[in-house]
Structures are given as structure tokens and as C-alpha cells.
Length: 134
Image (cartoon, rainbow, N blue to C red):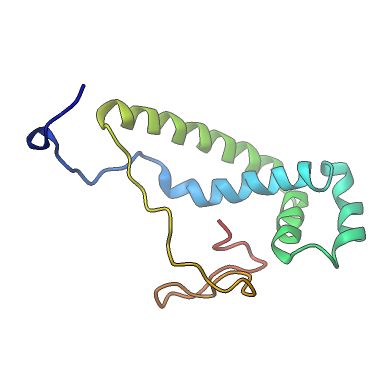
């Protein structure tokens, strides 16, 4: 059904639970890195021993995170949160026709730069701790 401009209204709204998205993403990505790159939990230690000098630090951090104490519980919690976010997005789209999100935070940067250290004056652009590695 097509609407006229007069029938269209813009609201600032978003699905519930999105505040957890970055942590959920990092946890699920750490699990996928462990399974995809390192060959699973049992092989990740030998992968780290063999390839730590040639693998970028962010991947190493994710593999170490996936090997850490309590990761299985964190992974289960992240999957539950992902399912809640999915359900919330579906509910949101039953009430709204569009969900418009920014997808680019900055213009392209030099290829030699691994990632920006700051954006708009705010630092903490990531590193081995995983912050900003989205």
C-alpha cells in the first residue's frame, strides 16, 4: 500500500534491546572465529601457538576470549539476547514501515591505518581489547 507524503510521519523509535548489540556481536564473532579460523575449541590453542605472529591482534584477542573462563555461559547469554533483539525487530516492523540506521560513521581512511583511533574527537577506537571492532 502506497502512502502520500501527507500520510507519512517520521518518528524517532527503535527496537528494544539494541543496547546489547555490540557485546552480543563481539561474543558471537569470537565464537565464529574460534570455529571458523581455529578449527573449533579443541584446536584453538594449537592455532594460537602456530599463527600468533602472523594473525592480526584483534583476531587473537577474539580467540583468547573464546577460550576464557565463562565463555560458554557468555555465548549462551549472547544467543538469547540475539533472539530477543530479533523478536523485538519483528515487533517493531509490525508497527513501522522502515527502520533507518546510520551505516557509515566516517569517510574512508588510509589503507595503512588498521582502524581509526578516534571518531569525532572520541577516542578508544579499539585495539586488542575488542572495543570498537565492529
